[in-house]
Amino acid sequence: MSVGIIGTGSYLPSKVLTNFDLEKIVDTSDEWIKTRTGISERRIIDDNANISDMAVEASKKALLDADLEVSDIDLIILATCSPETLMPSTSCLVQQKLGAKTIPAFDVSAGCTGLIYAITIGTQFIETGMYEKVLVIGADALSRHLDWTDRTTCVLFGDGAGAVILGKVQKGYGIISNYLAADGKGADLLKIPAGGSGLPATEDSFEKKLHCVQMSGSEVFKFATRALPRATKAALKRANLTIDDVKYIIPHQANIRILENVAKKFGVGFDKLIKNIDKYGNTSTASIAIALDELQRANKIHEGDILLLVGFGAGLTWGANVIKWVKYKKSK
Ligand code: UT7
Image 1 (cartoon, rainbow, N blue to C red):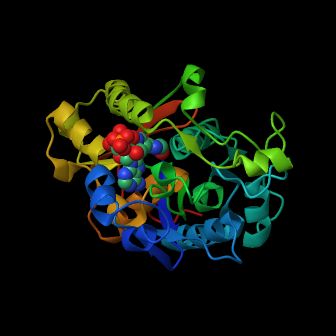
Image 2 (image 1 turned 135 degrees about the vertical axis):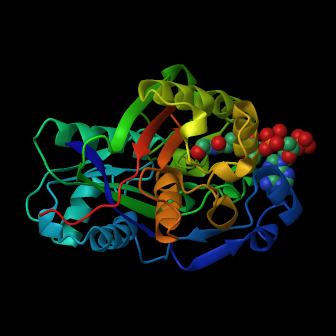
């Protein structure tokens, strides 16, 4: 028995915010954003929706894809950087909205690497025999934590959700290695300073926009160009594979130049890296799951293909999952 991905789903809000729209909000240009980041447009969550709503939509699609009912799920793990509330966890809200019974549900906070962490955690639960099917979600609405006067951050992020269902697959297939890492020395490089117990929301914190994303862009960029290759090498080594064995690298979508840099470092064709940043911007914990779902639904993944999911983010954190894809069948 191995553990694999037996269903995928994603959800993007319908509201599109283009670079041209942003030109009217801050001192920026379509040309700058496109050339420096690769982003053309991003989606923005509806005013009356929350991340649990996006997570539920992505989860329903993943359940349908796996040909499962919500009652088949044993555990929900939701990765996010923008939880709906500090308490309760967003995963509990998703559990209720999905109509799942009293199955356990918890959130994972690991920056944009959250999905990689959550897949790794979910895999362990199935490997130990404790659960059979785990719903893993990445959902973020960082648009609600952006300072719309700060051009260095507000042009980068978009909202969305992606989901995968983990379950048993035939031996030798599925998730064949995981690698996780963190370095809290870089905690200040990417953060939302206020709103937690360390700096509760006050008039002062609101005025100083401390509940908004703050980032040392160039430092995070440098970190990313080191972290992605590091995670890639480590996860492939654990899987006893090389980069040449990988059919698709599905990286966290933060900046097209980071991905170009990674392709160059590995001497692999840029087409091996899956990219959708132009349409969605950086959707944080959702980005890898959305890219995987789009690839899967385009019928581009075939049995035996090796996929590498690789991410980095606030924390600092980084990590990767190596997957040998298998065409899944319903196994209730
Ligand atoms: O999920 C993980 C989180 N984030 C990331 O991975 C982001 C990693 N970092 C990056 O992607 C890049 O560092 C950025 C896209 C954030 C910035 O690109 P950069 O090439 O590193 O630009 P920079 O910060 O060095 O800024 C260059 C210039 C500056 O002007 P001056 O000082 O040279 O006059 C900025 O003020 O570009 C200016 N600039 C802008 N200009 C127009 C910064 N943002 C903008 C903007 N529009 N939106």
